[in-house]
Image 1: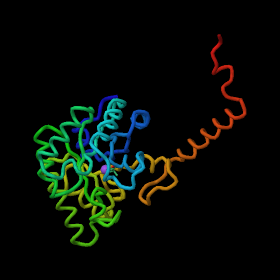
Image 2: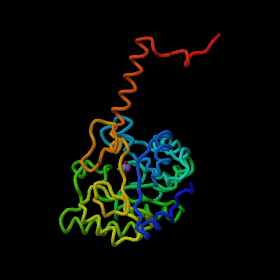
Image 3: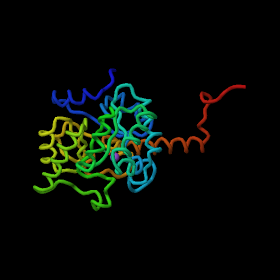
Image 4: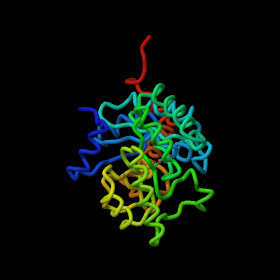
Length: 266
Ligand code: KIV
Ligand code: NA
């Protein structure tokens, strides 16, 4: 299958084809999602919550993203792979952002990086873009700012809020962003942003009018016992994995496994 490249994202928007994105944090899941036809894979800093047992994304390090991103990028044939720049690796300014993004590009093989923030992140987006590194922006609810935002709350409600999201979207687009993730914004606001910006919008809790959708894979697949309201559980992978583990335990305890087929002769 032909690799999804940056110009395909734009072309998809122009043709009205919806883009699909899932998070991935390791090679085996990345391969499964790539073979399923997912267009974009995000090595999200949600790895902190989903895989490393943190309650927020704030402790995630660039080292952790690099290891995961290398595994994901190495496993896919088609998907466009994006790596998150974690909290504390780009806020100081364009130089810090460039150093972090260059390291990710050199050491992983991903196609783009993502960072949070609108106007405040414009200098960083511009610097990375000028260096030839595609940037995905992230607006609305931005989990790295959860302490300032007061937890996961819908952003962009009311006229002022909607205006703010639109202004941010236009600003990051003009700075060179190749796509915009919109998280937890009212559907009409996301629809309006999708209309006014040239680049594709990828929604999560942002309604059906975005150019694409993204979900955290453990929420999408029903890996944990809880998924947020905006995520639909398309499977019960946690239950399936539990059943497999119980079967293994039972068969080892009863002596059914390993059988002759799993055993070497002298
Ligand atoms: O880290 C992540 O999973 C994300 C998505 C929720 C967009 O940033
Ligand atoms: Na993220």
